[in-house]
Image (spheres, rainbow, N blue to C red):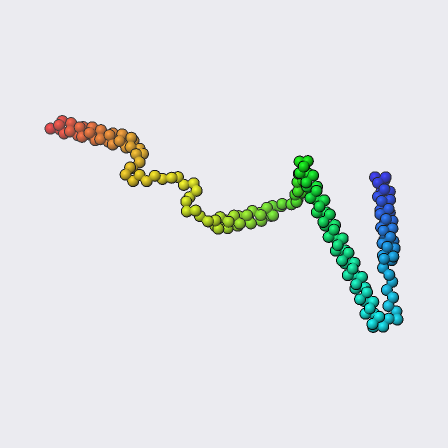
Amino acid sequence: MSDEQPNVQKTADELKRQQERDAKDREQYLGSRIKKLNLDGLDKSGLEKRVRELYEAVSKLEEEKYDCEFKLRKIEFETNELNLSVNDIKGHFVKPPLKKISKTEQKLAKIAEVKSKLGSAFRENLKSTGQPKFALEEKDESGKKPDWGQDQLSKHTKEEEGLAGEEAAADEEEEEEEE
């Protein structure tokens, strides 16, 4: 732990010295590029002339800046295109980085709510073809009736008829016995 402290201090000192050197270099460079503005003893026409000169210089520098930025963008675009073509040739495909999203329960609830609203609105706006998608084809057989349970029905009626016949026979026997 004690060894890390001096290293951190040395790194911080080095960083400060580097920043000071960069600031001095910047000041020297700007001093060599920017001339002192001598406005002492100039009348109105002299000041106007000086303003025009400075405006022309700024315009020229802005044009150079724009040209440099355009060239840089063009070079970056070409570099990117070349990298893509090299990757295509080699068979390497760059996967785009995915954004990390923290999903708390509230955010998930909001997302589900939005999806349900959008889903129902989406379903309501769908056009109908007039035919149900999962409907079974129905054949029109109006002459025929389905014979579901005909066997059961016939057995049941036969049994009833049989019981009725037995009851009638039993009733007849009872009547005969009574006589």
